[in-house]
Length: 298
Image (cartoon, rainbow, N blue to C red; front, side, top):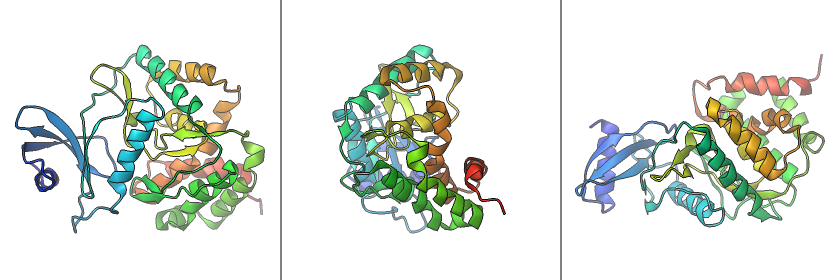
């Protein structure tokens, strides 16, 4: 085992899962270290934790908030999520899912599942009853009746104080983002709040052992449904996913202009990537391209 998987094994034993005999590394996550933990009876569970020099997690509530989000998506929205085995300060242990199948039929099922989540969980306010986490950064969810104000303050402008964002975006870019925020009511339609996954890039879409679409790694809040849609749209979904977008638009009554809004709605995720990762996989260039119309010419 690697140092990271040995760390996870030690934490599992300390948490009382003493029947775990080995941990194998699992790929996919960016913020935490993950693995498949094999138990003495031959079954496995998924485990993740934050491996740092101090051995300490980002905050005491990271995994509790994630577990709560998984439960909310399943119980309120009817979306499949992994079962929670343990949600502690140091570790999150979940039932094992499988990679999604590469079929159009799977993405059709996912369109129905996401449309159901977004159309049956409406809220009069934007936010969540507690803050939670997007990667290793706290996501502020203070309630607000105004979706434009909430999106501007807690999903876009909050990233401007991050050191990597300050380094990547110049003063003109930051001013352009502020102007974009001021014009959000002109740029985006009025939409109700609904329960959203909050970090719905394509790799967070998996499958249950029976093949049902399942979601992992949420950063839930009541927000515009199109924030989730934008994240799937812009994170390299496979070719067979084209049926998902067509069917989701039909099921939720999207207007024809929804594709044009995706770059603005995805600004939040690009800014989060810049703030947390180096390299940023082109996120800064995408932000600058979206902000170009809002820069003032000298």
